[in-house]
Amino acid sequence: MKLVDRSYPLPFFTINKNHSIYSYSKEAKELFGEPKNLLEILDEDSVEKMKEWVTPDIHKASLEVHVKSQQEGVDLLTVDLHVKWDNDLYGEVLLIVKDEKLTKVTRTLDQLRSRLNDTNFELLEEKEKLEEAVEQNNQLSAPFIVLNDQAALIPLFGDITEEKMYSVESQLLQQSQESEVDQLLFDFTAVGEMQRSGVHVLLNVITSLVYMGSEISFIGVQPAQAKQLKEINLPNEIQFLSSLQMALNKYV
Amino acid sequence: MAEHHEELAHLFLEGEEDEALSYIDELLNSYSRFYVFEQVITQSMYYIGDLWEKNKISVADEHLATAVCDFVLSKLKADTSGVPARKQRKHKAILFGVEKEQHYLGMKMVAETFQDYGWRVRYLGPNLTLEHSLAQIKKYKPDVIGLSAALSYRLPTVKGLIQQFEKLEWRPLIMVGGRMASKFDLEEFESDRVMVIKGLPHLHQWFKEGREGVINETS
Image (cartoon, rainbow over all chains, first blue to last red; front, side):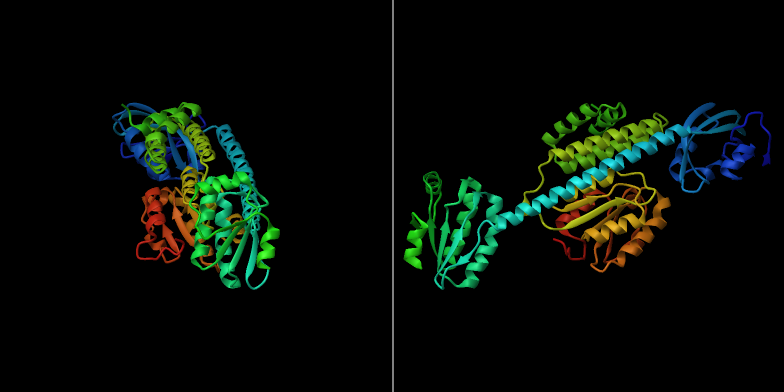
């Protein structure tokens, strides 16, 4: 193996068919040190490619390979490898490192991508905050107000949705058990739209409460809501009262 | 007829993002998301790697294909409505590619998978330094930290990260994934706190059955 002066200033090697290096140029030494075999400077995933394409069976070839970099902070360099064989024992290999511009474009793209990702991230955080706010809001839409040792008032607020009913389910069951009141007054005065799936979950909650021994009254059901409630099988135990005043007179 | 993943790979390589999207949309009519991610999209990117090895395409082509694939994945994500809020289990995961690692498409699909299972996910992207990841992790307190690496040069980095994350007092599960995990035997990393994930099917298995021999604390 010897250092030779080539007429062109590029990394250059002469090798045999086993990729052992006979000679190399000054530029090759600067970039890759003094390897004994050309395979040594390759990234492991390029070894097979080199073995397949850099062989005397193929008289001339050009291909891309990745080589390990000696530079700080860079793992791999992409190079164009050109090879020509005179005979089995003597191949000339020229390595040209890819244009810096490609690296620059790649890096800029990476930066753009990570900026998009950051934005995406911020949006995601806001979305999750919003979801939490909605969840909190949902939980506050069926407060459990104990009136005396017999009765509690549960005014429902806003639309009856599946999501909302699921959020209030466990707290209602728990509070009714803890408070030990028998009479639960559900006030529908402030209820807007009733979604079918929401009503369904509400029915489950009511049924559970009945099983737990509570007596349920629905107050202030509006005509449209009454129609919807009729469509589902409400437990027979439920009483209906037209106004909160009536309910209060009766139970308080 | 060419295989699905080969057809998709050619759409990626030609930069046909709209065609690629409608191609995948069509597949989603007859196949599950899991199948499409694992058997079509992932395989198409492997196929592109093979084409490079066969000297049929250049690194520049690969970059283009990656960008198109990234676009397609982001678009697919935006179209899914996600899990209803009541099913949102409050588990959290942070996912990122280790320092210098530029491969990130797999991670993106992993993030999707976590979301499909109702997790909250922070996907921090590739090439993240320890300081950055640690700062985010301490703030977010995830149940799972997923780190990904493709090349064997990252092994020391991965090792260092694991050591740092094992010190976290809320004891998150550390998942090591990426091509490195499927290609090399990383058994030495495994412990009750560290799990090596050898690909999307393995991850799905974890979600469904938990860890072999270990009770899945998060299920």
